[in-house]
Amino acid sequence: MSNYHINTKCIQEGYMPKNGEARVLPIYQSTTYKYDSSEHVGKLFDLAESGFFYSRIANPTVDAVEQKIAALEGGIGAICTSSGQAASTLAVLNICNAGDHMISSAAIYGGTSNLFGVTMKKMGIEVTFVNPDASEMEIQDAFRENTKLVFTETLANPTLVVSDIEKFATLAHKNGVPLIIDNTFATPINCRPIEYGADIVVHSTSKYMDGHAVALGGVVVDSGNFNWDKGKFPGLTTPDESYHGMVYTRDCGKAAYLVKARVQLMRDLGLTPSPNNAFLLNLGLETLHLRMERHCSNALAVAKWLKINDKITWVNYPGLESNKYYPLSKKYMPNGTCGVISFGIKGGREAAVKFMDGLKLAAIVVHVADARTSVLHPASTTHRQLSDAQLVEAGVTPDLIRMSIGIEHVNDIIADLEQALACVPE
Image (cartoon, rainbow, N blue to C red; front, side, top):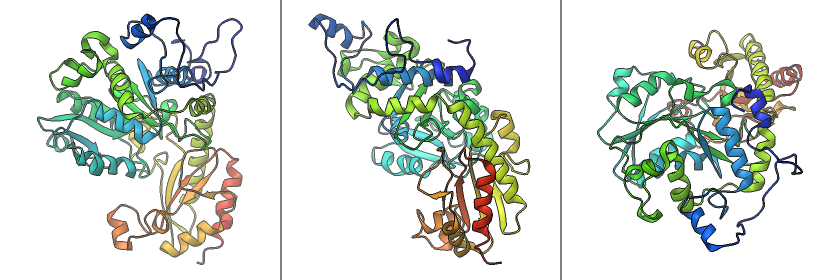
C-alpha cells in the first residue's frame, strides 16, 4: 500500500483480511497461542519464524495497529506501548544505560521532563536540557563523549514551541547519535519527522490518534535509517546473553533497534498495551486525517477571534502569522499544526477562573487532543501550589488558559467563549 495517500492508509493499512475473514480488525483477547509442536515454538523464540507466542511480546490486534502507524510515519516498523510515557521510556532505555547522557529540548511535556530529569537520573542516566531556539553552536556545547541521543517534540506540549527538526537532526548525526522526536501534537497527518532526519518517532496515542479519550497508549516508530554500528551502542552490537547471544545489528539488520526493544525490554518491563485498547486506537486512526483538518481549522478560527477580543491580553498559536514560530510551522506543518491553543485574560488568575467556570460547551478536564473541546487553567489546578512568581518561573503565567479545540462547529465553540467572557468583569 506504499503508493496510497496517507488518508487512505489511515483506513486500509495494517489489517488486510483474507477470503472469508472478518472485515474489521478483530480483538484477539488472548494472552497466549497454541502450536502443534515444541519445535515450532522454539523457532518463534529464535526469531527463525514469525508468529505470536505471548501477548506481552506481541499480539495480532496490536501488531496490525503497529503496522498502520509505521506506514503513516514512514518507518520500517513500530512497537505499541501501554502509554505515551511508556513509549518515551522504551525509546530511551533501549539505547541508554547507567552512566550515559542524553540531550533534550527544555520545551517538552512536563511528564516527560520529570521522566528524564528525575526518574532516569535515579537510573544513572543524565540529561541536559537545552533551549530549542538556541543556536547550533550552543546546543553543540551540550554534547559529551557519553551522549547517546537527542530528544525533542515536533510541537511542544503545552508551550507550542515548534522544533527546527533539521537543526536537531544535523547536530545529532554530526555527533553519531539518533534524534528521537515526539510527534504527538502534530501527528503524521501534519508532520512526518522522519522525512526531515528524525530516526525514532514516539507518540502518546492517547491524544489525537485515539481522538476520543477512551484508551491510553503509546508507540515507538523506527525509521530504519540510523546506523547503530558506530561503537556507541554496545547493547545493539554485542551479544545479548539474555536472548541466546543474539547480536541485533548482525541478526536483525535495519530492524535491530525495534527487535531489541521488543524481545528484551518489552519482555522485561511489560509496557504492553491491551488488545482492546489497540482495537479502539485503530478506530481512532481511521478518522485521524478527517479530525486533524477540523481541529486545525477550528483552532485557527478561535485563535483569530481571541486575538481581537478586548478581554484577551495574548494568544499563543503557531498558525497565527504573528506567532514567532509561524515560519517553522509552515516549513514542517504547512497544512496545519494542532488544535491546542493558549491565551491570557485581563484580570489574571481570578478572571481566568471565572471564565473557566462560565464555560458550558467546553469541559474542564486534565486532557488534550480529543474530539471534544476542553480547557484547563494550570495556575488553579495542576500548578495551584505555586505562587504567581513561581508560576512565571515555570513558564505558566497566572492568566494562562490552555484550550484544546475539538471538532464541534466552530461557531458554537466561539459562542461558548463569548458568553463565558461576558461573565468576566471589565
